[in-house]
View 1 (cartoon, helix red, strand yellow):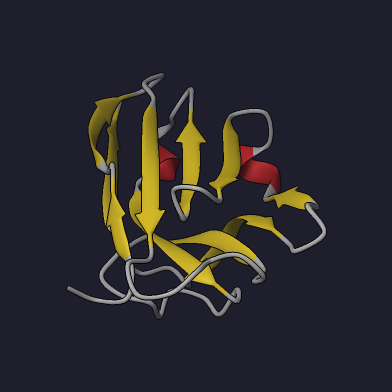
View 2 (cartoon, rainbow, N blue to C red):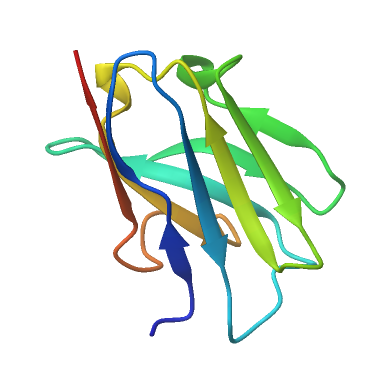
Length: 114
């Protein structure tokens, strides 16, 4: 088991919803800027949503109004609730403490079919 455990990905149709989870069994997520990145085949890693230590949340324009990032300190888990999914959301999603990108592990795959 790696430092992060990401789950919740899957295959849905356009308009569907998924909730991604990221837990950190070996360390606390508190005190770090956190975020979710995604990488589609042939594309660069891109930031989808972030939550900094002041509670400021930002979203990529492509997901505003559809995705919600949240953090549960008691569960030491970062979430990404995704609604109204589109085929262009298809990617591997990575949780990223410290906002370092898609380098924390294998991520969780989201596939949206039309």
